[in-house]
Image 1: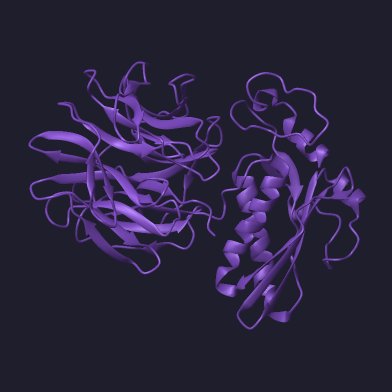
Image 2 (image 1 turned 180 degrees about the vertical axis):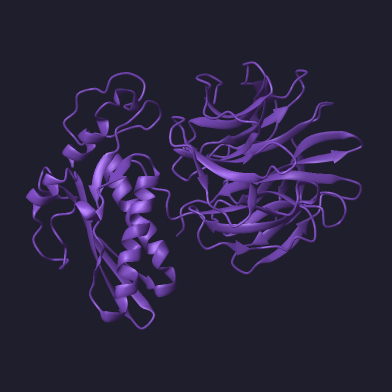
Length: 441
């Protein structure tokens, strides 16, 4: 275990957090927040099919695990063509010398069995150079339809064991699917696995939909719809694809909703009489509480993980900036002071950072800062980057990137909080406004 974690640290002293890592007797833990890292070499041979019907799943499960781990930028797979040993029995002895010879510092082996539509996955992880098994030997049982999810769970367990961080692979993303030309864009809500697989459409494209947001339990989605001709907030049950309107009152427009951590309250923007302020609403009763009262525009609110504070954007200072206030309303303090305009703030699930969109000198950026506004760091730059959302472990951000020109389209990208590993997220069509779910139960 220590050998694997030490290997992750090679050439990456900045990854140990702010300052040098103190000497310690327990396992090393790496805080992935800055610096460049040499990916850890690992091997994941095809899992062993233990029943005839398992053959079609065994290799695919191993490939999804490899895609998850390599996709983080922290791991590098040793290809099957380089393997010396072949794993033919899950309980057979491991020939560590053969895996050392190809410089695989971690080894993941597994077995799959299928009975009817039931599927069982067993797996183990090994520290090759220490010649010992990791503490990840587990078994997952489900249905054949859920084989990809079991692969994600295996990858989460391995990732957590080696990095000391919680995983994020067994999660979903709700987003706005976009099709058609730029001047006649059709939009509908869709949900997918974090890696773009298993896309399911939740609404049709008959009306514009914006800014979907997952509930803390991942069972419901808030979004803004123009179905009535002006913006109103809807809440949708993802499993049953049932929805209802959360009315903010006649003559008002409501938008930019987000759940409180308790899942019972939402905070949102409401425009009435030319003024836009923040309100809270109890979903069940519809009772509303006004949180701000100012001539400026207050929008894009996001709760802290403990529910005690809200970060939001406002132009009360004369330009679009970020502010934090108590969740029940009250005095707000400004936290953004760099050049340019700031918007769409989102509190990290770890509670340590705020992600945001920044516009400065004709470029858009996704950035992060501490919750007091310190240590601002820009992670991206392009013609138009906006709308960040956090992975459940607070270490990766997904966002919308739109290309320039009349044929430009919106796509989803992800980047880790070091600014490394920027990559597109595969979707069938154009995509925008992502919202990451918590880990699935």
